[in-house]
Image (tube, rainbow, N blue to C red):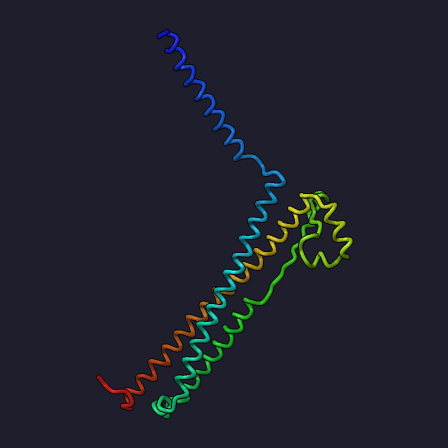
Length: 224
């Protein structure tokens, strides 16, 4: 009995090791295999959701920048329209102060329009017309609204009844490429917008420093 148990223990260990090697081999094969059509469809939908989320983030960043710009503009208007502030500016420097405020107003208008440009709806319609792609793998035009309205309701329903999953995957891939172009342009514009916001902040800081300097020089503000 003792010798039999000693034989069984290594045999069981070899069996478990063999199973583990098979599992590792299967995992390696699964990691290197191509996706099937349904897995590709789910992956493309996940990618599209992420692309739309990036569009939303860019829009929120543009709206936040517009709010900050509005606060800066309001502070400048309230500051320069006060009579005591205008009286503090030396007559010889009022022209230069007017030039500085004109530059600020031009920058503010330009970048506020840039924020509106980011928020406007955008669309790109890349086409998949590669000659090596099979007809059954070409987009069927059943998802994107501009393709949908080219058909009547009956024809659209007929297209959905005959659509293949490869055609859906192709259409999803084209839409994702379109959204990637939208995100590229939006995030480049957001970078420019925040650069403009920094420039506006520097100009406002310069105006405030000059006005405080003039106010102290004329005794409008109490000296320490």
